Length: 459
Image 1 (spheres, helix red, strand yellow):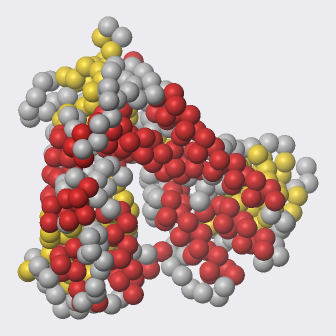
Image 2 (image 1 turned 90 degrees about the vertical axis):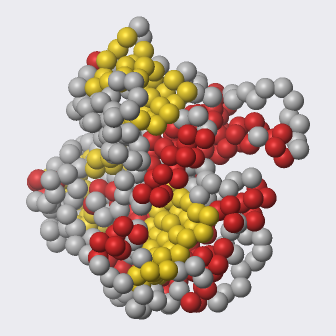
Image 3 (image 1 turned 60 degrees about the horizontal axis):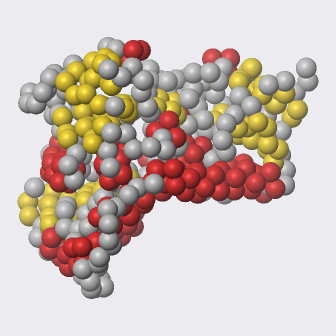
């Protein structure tokens, strides 16, 4: 069967795919874009947008329960209507997905194909009965929840971050295996909805990629809301008892097992690269199944790029979109951009949130360089006090020789927004004194950033 020729093929409609397709089309190229499921990828359908919509509902429930602290009488008990919570989430997520699809279908010189794309060669892709060919192919297939091979996993029902979004009831006792970003967000969310929640983590602390003081502060935040945290669960196994899920844990403290009504697995992600026919295109993968790319996101096969979660160079919506910007800049704008120019930054969207940029304090210490660190508690921030949200702190690490900011962690109200003022100075390669001498508005969280920089001491 003869293939339909295009200038470019884009596989997947996550954050990177539509941007690349649209920009190439506007430059005059003919583009085929392929989607096998819901338009918009993880962020729109099972990630950022739906989960943060539910986080907002959980925050509303939490603040309603606290209303009396602010002199507000709500009256009666606070009830969470989970079907309505889910309906609101579905509506907002659905609008985003529909918008992505509609935008692509309206774009001149872009042809949308729905189905599973598989490579037949480095330049030919099949989608059902259709065969497409192009000299430029962009892979943007995302990832999915990792289901570990722990003992008993085949004998109990479980939820993942995707199926958890279909829950329209409040689990009596939700057990979450995995004490990192996804697990913590769902844990606090469903605790605020009314579930008993136990988080089981194999490591000796939550979110081990963060500094120890960040991990400890997050434990305190969760425990203050009645969430059970079980650490050092070295030998997790699963079984069923009277219709409940029993999680056996080998912990240094606490009961040897936890019995709950529902189980959420939040132990990581894996790329959607195992059914693309990449071997027929000769595209190289690493041992975890991620597509190997260079600093400009090119694979080992000329004319094929990999963007977003499937390339292992970032697991966030913002890094995926930046991948698209890098590719477009290099292809169309004669503007050499590289992944290595990117400063790591992300958020943990519990309440209060964590905003992170650059290196952690532990990573800086490991380099052996001379450095300075400044830290202030959120209880010193008048905005936090006024809002009754004083958990957390601001921490900034600075190179002692160049005065450049190496990294920052802002755990506290507004931390996911405030961190960008630090991030922008890092990108500008300006010294920390630029912020230190700035006059910020009172009363805000941002005004404590210059104050924090006045506390710098040797690391």
